[in-house]
Length: 101
Image (cartoon, rainbow, N blue to C red):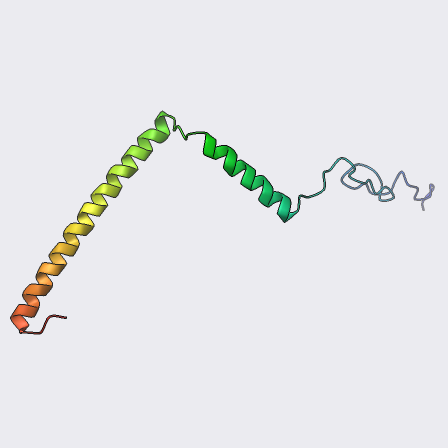
């Protein structure tokens, strides 16, 4: 048997610590920016960035140098690979006595 009526005090509290009766409006939240505003902001950021030169810190620089070296190695390997393929293909077509396309 309940002695007190289920008043607003005993009602289960929501996230904002008040009863379900309070719908607190989020007055301090800013309205979401529209896609046009976002586009304009990104454009401004881009223009601002164009002015500054990208200066990597030491760690980043180390990685960039390493990446550059690996890229060059890969390029060399690829060129060698292609050269080998070309030579083997010409040899093969010579052996088969096929016309060159």
